[in-house]
Length: 340
Image (tube, rainbow, N blue to C red; front, side, top):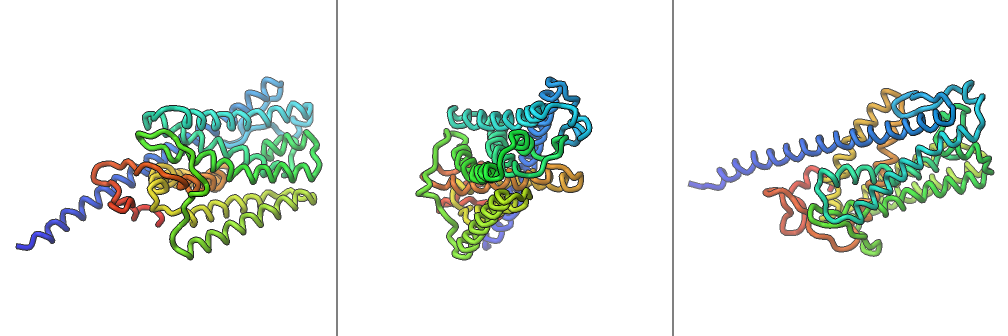
């Protein structure tokens, strides 16, 4: 009797079971992303309210992603008070992200229950400065309904060229933050963080992805420079900068060799669950008309860029559960669940 069909019949349910477990794990990890983002956003807005109240401003939560006062109330307070109330929260959010990043890089291998929340705090907090600076040239209402950095820039009375310079720094901060986050994505269950080498960054093997990724990267640079020039000329729309950030993420997704061991682990551990959580927040933010809709761009793009940078240099093979380990050529057995 030929035993091969029996082996095949047993292998298929086992494969489906592994994929089901992987999907369930990704969904649970996506819930972690939503929870961490929700807590960080709530903390950020409460910092606005607390700082404003300390300065005598009766600020309240206006939505899940904003806090402030009406224009009529804001007009009765000194501009410096409004600027301080707007500026403290972004500094705290950025400081939390950098503190989590420093812990991840400086600590010995830690339990996943500790490492995962710290990594997500870093993934959200480190690029946050760029998200604020790119909209610093936007028009500001007295109640502080624009971005926090725009309120501070309005109080400082920056010239249009200086506004453009701040916006340019914000755009540059996104790839810089991705480079900072790359070591955290290289951390394994039994490994400490290690810096990648940009000279060794791997690119996708297929030509069409390299060409498409290069086009997307050039388009991102073009939109970014156009946005900076528009701010310098007196415009204030953040749309060109937002398009630049989105296209940089698209370029990174196309250029990253997702079968590379480090990129594979980054996808399964951070990028895949992150896109699930950020996608859910995008839907909620779009329906509820709040800033959660923008997180998929402002957090997802640096995360994708960090995955690309993380491929630079040698790394240990990914640590996978029994029965789902890497194949002989170093590729994950679960590549069907990710971008190839």
